[in-house]
Length: 117
Image (tube, rainbow, N blue to C red; front, top):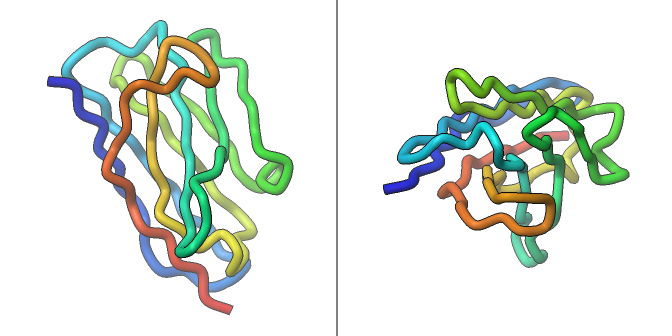
């Protein structure tokens, strides 16, 4: 059974940092694209960042320069380092995996990030 489990969310003040981790199990994701999405209350889920199996990275425009995505294929994990956080970054953050960008098949349950002003 494939599982993606996020951790690292929490409450932080504006300008602060958080590091989200996602541990994958049930299969090897070394050739998969791994990504992060988020959904704020009353809004649609949006793309945050992704990393391909050869570590090409992609970011949403509003996150570029503040967020950094990385992966460890040996540990089947993907990490999202979030710096210079803003209250608008408050959302439920989801980890996802798929064979390529735009085709995410597996999703985690999410971890809450709350940024206070």
